[in-house]
Image (cartoon, rainbow, N blue to C red; front, side, top):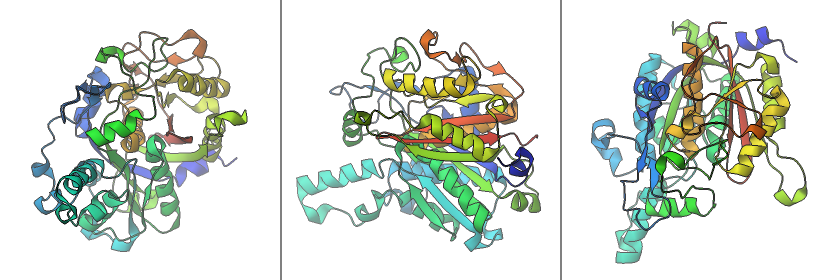
Length: 414
């Protein structure tokens, strides 16, 4: 195992955060909502959802596209890309980075995408079926594409290094950070990474309902209760976070300060098919990430859980955590109950929240559940934030179909 000191000394640093989420626009607004337990979940307002079994979701409040996105890009791109463009501007400013002052081929972009430009694609299909092919715009060919956000961020800011997109649903946000670390270990000095999603439209919600995992409860406060005896699935949401990652040397050279957190370890896995009789992959993924970070289980101070709210999946995740850390061996939290699951943006937002927790020395609580199901054996943080001297955080994420990922973050105060 690599020594923790060696891992931490050259670990990439998260130097900037940009948040556009149901909990607010901007890192400060998001963090205040998380600590205050202020939910961003409400009745779906972007379209009439009365005919659908799911009527609640996490929507980004007060996002005026014309105030945050260049006018020429609005008609060319989907809302998911609009959210990412706004978050990128914030993240670069937060990191104090002016891309024009850095070598263009040493700056990269890697984002996560779950569904691509869903709403844009829906409108173009409506034009096709109602009016014919002549009514379909040329930008349909790129706006719906999974890599549209990566491309638009790269073009707008002149980031001409390696660019890519990770399509692993909820796990994609962690996978994007893992890929960014690989690029930094090669030749990139800075990577814009993370992800956003915006699939709250009739086509998008219909696609999400197909997995059978969304909660259809009519009480929005009781609809998404991960690890609870009353868990019944999850609620969807939109938004996410964009992160600025830099090599430790590059950040120090430009006087960037300590940053929010260091990326110490990462691993990804894929679950076997249910009929195989083989165990889920999450425990192995978790252990591999810790080994990659050079971190022992007793050095982890908090786990940001995937927390799907689907009872079978909650049980499997709790088992993985319990097997590695012991019964009640580590505080566990799931602040995504304030936003819903954001798919391509969910993992990235959890990374941003975990980085803030490390910097501030406080574990945000999980709202909704009154208590964790006792058979899970989890120390689920409930009732309010828990102050703690945090040095290491573990973030877990799973995507539909079997994707899973784990990311280990370390405090920059070490």
